[in-house]
Image (cartoon, rainbow, N blue to C red; front, top):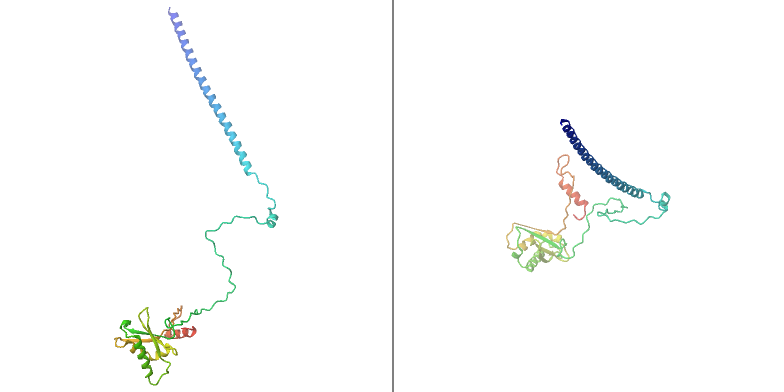
Length: 255
């Protein structure tokens, strides 16, 4: 009785072991199937990549293939062949082409010529005698121009010794820039001829209007000269400004 129970127990034990073995085999089979499917997928991927790689190599080979040379283009062809038409692109900042100077002779610094005034109403005309009062006298404080002109001519006639009859005045105007009176010399004389009688003329023009001083000068054209690196004193310390001015005036005409 005891032995039968032992045999039964052994049988039961054998059935359980067989169940476990079948379960393990089924699990291994499923894993094998999964691995097989994975291998198949990788094979397909490799085939696709190999095909793409082949196409890429073919494309690179065709693009890198040297083009056949153009007829007439070579060392000899480039020398004798006509120049092909090219596209010209305009530059945003073109460089100006300056033609070479043929005459390299240095030019002399001279005062540019100016047109000479033709009427007394124009500045620097030879008949204009400009009068400056200190302090300035307003034009409305002066007497009528006709009276002033008549008195000046009468006074010029009475000068002793007698002066030429051509030294007369014929008019008077007022400068619009600074309200300065200007005496116009006669047809046969100039303002420089009247400068010798400036004291007489300024006294008649001012009349009874108070002033401290007066000057009457011809309306000359003035120039400005700039000198660089010119010493104002000699090596002995002597002032030489007057000598410099005289030299410049003598060298430049019109000053």
